[in-house]
Amino acid sequence: MSEPIKVVVTGAAGQIAYSLLYMIANGDVFGKNQKIILTLLDIPPMMGVLEGVVMELSDCAFTLLTEVIPTTDVAVAFKDVSVVFLVGAMPRREGMERKDLLSANVKIFKVQGEALNTYAKKDVKVLVVGNPANTNALICSHYAPSIPKENFTAMTRLDQNRACAQIAQKVGSDITKVKNLFIWGNHSATQFPDCSNGTVDGKPVTDLVDASYLENEFVTTVQKRGAAVIAARKMSSAMSAAKAAADHVRDWWIGTQSGNYVSMGVVTPKDNPYNVPEGIVFSFPVEIKNKQWSIVPGFKINDFARSKLDITTKELLEEKEEAMAVCNADAKI
Ligand SMILES: NC(=O)C1=CN([C@@H]2O[C@H](COP(=O)(O)OP(=O)(O)OC[C@H]3O[C@@H](n4cnc5c(N)ncnc54)[C@H](O)[C@@H]3O)[C@@H](O)[C@H]2O)C=CC1
Ligand SMILES: O=C([O-])CC(=O)C(=O)O
Image (cartoon, rainbow, N blue to C red):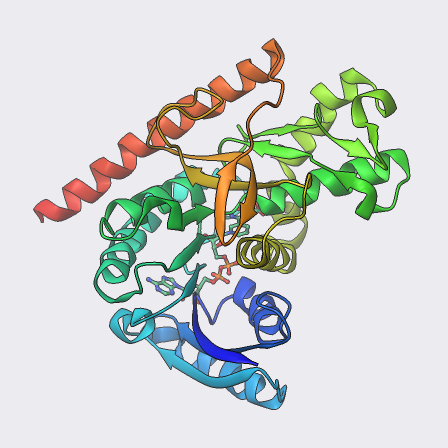
């Protein structure tokens, strides 16, 4: 059994956390030999609900949980933390785009970035789930300059999982045989779910499914899946979001298998292999070794794909500008 690691989940009294906490405490993320100190951050009005969540975690009798700490204080939450799931933020409702949440939510990620900068371990790994996830991750990293930018990532794994499920259903395959479908860009309706490098049981997806479906219905179904769930449930995806967060961090912690890549929103480095502008959080295919991700070079980007990458890049640049304006205006008050 390894020494316990401190893991924080923010928005711990909310919907996504309710499924995610189970997976973390059950060993589905860090493995069955990793003990965990689980810290639950939420806001004061939610402390009653959080007390109930703490009771249920206790009643699950998880063998890996050494301690559960509910708190409203970022200093308590982030002190010496190893892994952070930043879930706590307002969800959208029917008729909204995720970027409509920007002005309300981005300030949370500024405050939490500053707190991580002060209190967290310098090798902390941060996953941003709260929307708009890419730009919130960028802001969080911006306000935590003492922590490497590589340690901040945004979740596009739910989109990747959705894409794999759509293709598995379309070709009538077991989902475990679907590989290397990637999400490029923003976790928004401009994202580009890309099958051009994907395989099902080793065969190219492009040989199994017609191009018109892959360029049209498939793309819009994945882009708009979050909205479709909200229209049906009147609340946004939660169980599937929690599963994707667990998948994202498990792969970051344990590593990806050879030749089997995953999508992650990462701060774009200068000279990245796909010529995306530096300094936005953009989803790429990555591989992970020794807890470090790297963008996988060499995937083909045809004219259709390039036009999609350009659209999502433009949106991310606009979101960045708006987010910085909100944070700077906030600083002047
Ligand atoms: N990246 C992705 O793929 C997905 C992202 N999301 C986003 O995740 C976020 C959370 O969704 P749900 O859990 O469904 O929402 P929810 O409303 O059920 O829970 C959010 C929780 O965050 C808490 N919270 C608010 N401000 C906080 C702060 N400053 N510090 C700590 N906690 C705070 C709230 O009190 C609440 O308990 C939303 O922004 C949603 O849009 C949802 C699904 C997928
Ligand atoms: O659509 C939403 O607002 C929640 C979300 O991010 C998703 O389900 O992908």
